[in-house]
Image (cartoon, rainbow, N blue to C red; front, side):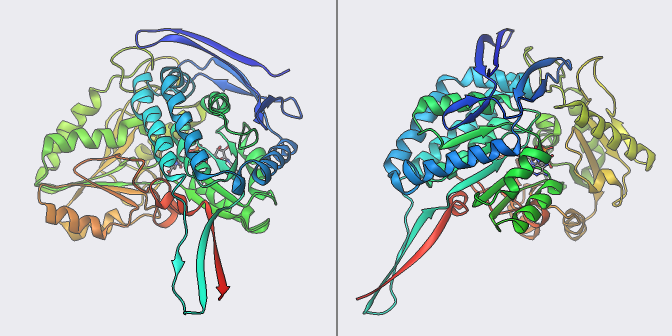
Length: 496
Ligand code: NAD
């Protein structure tokens, strides 16, 4: 018997309710996992149990892949027109607008981000992405290529088949949309696994996808643990492509499993340790505000977080003073209270991990300029933390902390900062603050990062590709480039 999750909110920022099944969504229906085991979903604001959701075992992965394959071969894949795919994606976007507040509330409850951020960033961007790919669905086309007069050569952009998609917990709904948008626009069928820490919006989206009218089996949504369900997806012989967002460590495992099984295509969106560079001639007030947003937004749980903050020596003291005041002004508290900027970290595990990093920074001799402590008595809250007096080989400078912890580092000139900024295995994002556009752009062009922001941070748009250099990833999501990894190109040669 599939369980149901029901919840009512009567809070300063949202009043409303939700109710949905907590099973696996396979072939258009909610079902229990074959072993009937469940996963506890914990409220990070106070550590209480929100609900339990079904756990998918490898047998369930097989059933979901079979359903996706059947749908691909009969009612989706090459059997559905681009116009129809576009119509369905547009309907999905309309329904997401209708349920926007409810989706935002579920996300805030499950993940701990504030209701307002969930609504104005995560769900809004998610809707934009679905709309954007609805626009592409009837424009997937190959080329006619001139070879010689007696031949006709052309390409077809065909869907790949059954694709697996594995999500992290930091932007559960937004990244859900980044994943399904291009896959559906190009005609693939999907088996998607949400994070075991934040499965709820993905399950509610299963219902909404069904309501939009997608054929059963087009999008199958399963919940489960990485080392069981995720591993089964990565090794599955009938999955042709796997799209993963998460840590570099797990990305490597997925690539190995893909290589050892059927050599499925792999795209990876992985971690980061992004440099945020502020030159002497930056607009200081704006640089402080953006830098704070860069590292503290989403409680520092952003792959592109500007966690290494390089400040030129002429403004270092003044910047640090203002940046510290800004960090101290951030209001922590219940994600559903008004005027709150920062909620809890997502889980006890993440809380402990971040606190371990803070301890290691102290032990290595860095100075905690502000923060470094727990906020409140319950839940997983950590005060915004700034370290100074760091050395390049400290763990807090080299490794992704994935929490509200930034290191501020002084630099002298462009050559000095470029050397330090690029001294990392990651290459996801970077930001440069300067009022001299020549300096800003010549710096940007020498940074090894998939995204670079000038005088701003954390800008992502459905239309613009996102992805990493170096060990931050393989392939791109969003934009036109995000379609490329969901198509097989067939070249056809005709003798005339
Ligand atoms: P994670 O790698 O621990 O888990 C991500 C997903 O992988 C989860 O669904 C998990 O169940 C699954 N998983 C775990 N082990 C697996 C295995 N052996 N095989 C298959 N799947 C497995 O990451 P997380 O803690 O959920 O998220 C944080 C990480 O995600 C950070 O490193 C962050 O930088 C990264 N991230 C990157 C982007 C990007 O676009 N580049 C976006 C968001 C998050």
